[in-house]
Length: 437
Image (cartoon, rainbow, N blue to C red; front, side, top):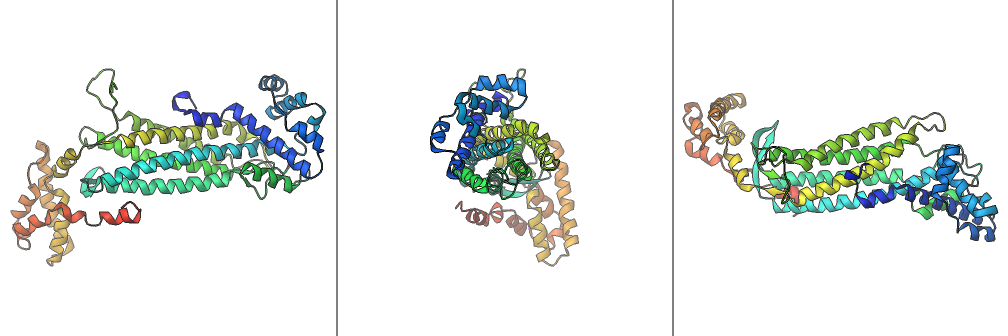
């Protein structure tokens, strides 16, 4: 991933140095396992524990061999001497690669889960703060009925919690190792060593494997990462909509000295949220590649290998960055409650149409007849919007002058139907269900 979208702690996990250090850790643990089986003598093991590799020598050998693991092994063996014959005993390259990858996935996953937890805490705090901040709800981009901004954020809390559970489960499925030899039969290395190595590394054991850990696990993981990205995109997109000039209810942070446009000094663009929406598309592309990696030839081919060198580090790095950025957005979110109130009133009471409909039905009017009565008055009010924001209780006035409506509902009854509090009594229920009360 490019430096612009990379945080240092995640970059360290996916660095070449850390990857190769983890390969060495796997190799040394296998030697410890062989020593437990009585295959490697104690005096040889003591020297093997001091084994190291030379990164520059590895690159030199790889230019000759075109094989990174062979280059790694030769670099170790050249330094180690005769005891080097025990390094990689009974293993195939994927025993080292996939088991080390599982360690990196576990480490990188821990960073993602911690970032998600921090984001969740921020969104939960904002949801509580705005539990009673009334705004208009929108469906299809059109004013619908009142709700609160806190309820909207509570929905995000629930969504992020599900995303976290999916990610944690997918990390557990993917963070498994295999030390089972060339085609997974354990013919050259016993299962006890596999169990020992994976236990020491703190990862799971693939109960059965081919030459590799099968890639449905990684596809599930990449899909979970993409889903977290999609959740962030959905939330960022909502903020983008709410920040539009015509809405102006919620704004992402705008730092002192920040500039929105090279040409127009007045611009305050939702550039962080737009960036998140764009990066979520990249994550989805990675998920498609991971799904295509599941179907490999026989016990393995390496068509997945080249793609995973890109998609796995980049997906973790990108999502880690996205969680960090959206955490900043949510912590510094600016909410214009006065604009929310103004927008709530800008349609002249159209948001109360369903309540009037239900009241007419309660008075004995058939549903379709009642619907038409309210709709024709609502359409009259809509036409007023051509001259700008609608002033005053236009729907109330229209209904009160409709003799067919007032046959069932007096102007006083109509006015009582147009109260915001009607829509709010169960807001607490959602917060209680989420443990946010």
